[in-house]
Image 1 (cartoon, helix red, strand yellow):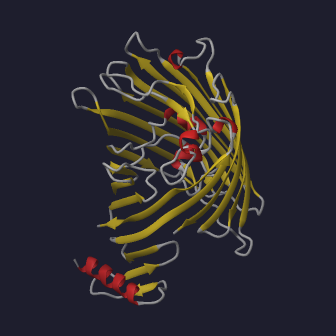
Image 2 (cartoon, rainbow, N blue to C red; image 1 turned 90 degrees about the vertical axis):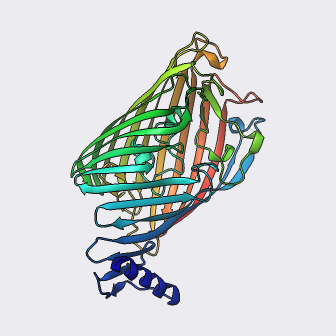
Image 3 (spheres, helix red, strand yellow; image 1 turned 135 degrees about the vertical axis):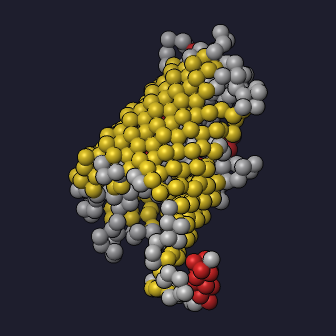
Length: 429
């Protein structure tokens, strides 16, 4: 109780004071340290208790045409991609809690709350940690990297093949994590907010392993493998595989989008497959990255297999990949923590850090039920060319030109390619 009383007293002092400065407050228990850089953090000097308030705001504007709209005409969208309030901390030294709430409503749902994460991690078995609650399971390098610090505004389109593998979907799970100097591994089992005909929740298993013999900012060599599986036996499911092809503005929950004129690529599946249509759904992936100074290269490969359990449906098979190169013109390296990339920290506070990048995404699906020639697969190809300005450690301004081309699908106007531009203003604390 002495620890909590001290934290409460510190918070009251901050509310009264016009400005807060880093320092130490003496109490009848452990001393309390207050940090105000990058959010507000209050903790005891013995590191047994802490409380941090942070968040991120990502305001996007996009304009697009061609395949991205039903009629091929130009449309635009202005929206909050993310508006997170983040609460985290430590209790009794070994218990780590995280609560992230999305006021843009792109995470979660009205029934379950718009939580991006709400979890508790026990870290007393170092180097192993045990996490329970609602969280995104591990699958892929770009997903492991925070949305604050991924290079392009949207993660690669190949992830749309397997949108279920690293999304919490309002479920609950338990995860075991292992972290050492060169290795990272995790396994998780989740109960999804989706039931079979008997009311039993869909279960999902994820596993990820990473080996990084070089693991410092500007000196990275990274390899990883991923696997995920869920059972859909006797479960009604929306099996559609759809992609926005890097253009979130065609359909988003965080504000204005293109409405009914927005167009997504349908690669396979159906919107309402009845119970018994499909059985197991599995995916595996490979990831690799190399960074030397301000230059970085990374890529991932993903393969999915959704098995049909009825003669009325076909197996759905798909694969996808992306390759990305990035270079910081001002010389700063991308940050790296074992298993994921991190932020770029500007060396010059006057001009910030400037990064340019190019990424190519490719995805293809084979499914005869989508109503196209059975001999042809649906393919999506996306070119992303962009620039990021890290004005400081809190503000990032981004712009990206996106060029998409699809095979064996088109919009209502007969277009099979499209162009778009996205700009983002981001503030993190």
